[in-house]
Length: 444
Image (cartoon, rainbow, N blue to C red; front, side, top):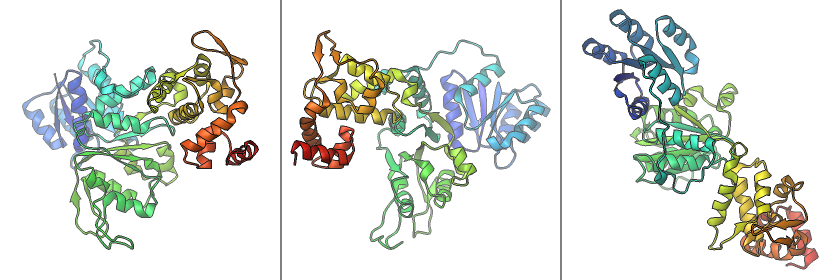
């Protein structure tokens, strides 16, 4: 059963073909309504999936013309959020349905199956175990994220990863890259929030020697460094709006113009972007271009916060412990209970830092609640008593943090090479509090 895909953007065509073929359909893709009309004159597919806005004849015009010769041919139109009027017109012309961009791939498959009468039970996509190597995901929510990411990894479609800070968006981006045809080349990562706007353009697009003050050498830029690979733009919502037209051009034309250069250069890359901002709100506020938003948001994958995937907390904590410096440490039962009780507003990043601190403060091979940050201990304080039962069932008197703080402070200072600010962060106290304790304990 063949599905005809009509879209002027190659990344959409390849994405839809990949998803439909993986579901057992045959798929054929063309770039224009005119090409689709030529095909319909000689062969009739089971269904047409078409974009609305295309150069030349639109998807609405394609539907209107096809209806004259093939009144029963199922049509599914894909439209941007701003094209609701087109969607209404399509339904009046007899389209079976329409989808809004960014397209939910499960909705796409469901719409196609409904239209062509295929109601067989759909087998859930299984991510191969080798693809999950190094990934910790026990919760259903995170496994769904990885299934979606794995499904689209083989295409070149732009993907926008959203979610709170610290949820693991870069981990998912690397997972997509490692399971893509571009895996043999290094993924290029740039944090748009960490580079001043005046320098970001040169970092991304490159520059010629002398293009601006300080440009003493020629620079290729990250787009060209990502040739044949994946470019990951983290914190894309922080990109200055004056740079956004150049990024839009790079996406639309797959070409860039280095600063100080007058010639466009073709680039072959796959774009992933991430943000913790609500980009539609940024669009409404005039801080982010709407056309750029839709170009980035071909596929949207939201990473849930850690509080919504509590099944991952302890596996992640044990994973972070296992990656520490050749020291085999484990969580006591009470420490595990404290970790499980904390809501983790800082998400996976906060959990990683908490385990780093606990590893640093623990003098034995067992992590106790006293080694965790105070805010984590407080979450479980009602359920913890002065005695802690270890995993072996033996009760131990807990040495308080105050009694061991001298050793803890020395280890923190050693770990941070004497940096008092970082040591205070590890200990979960203020820098001023650390200095006070050092004076009281005679630590220099």
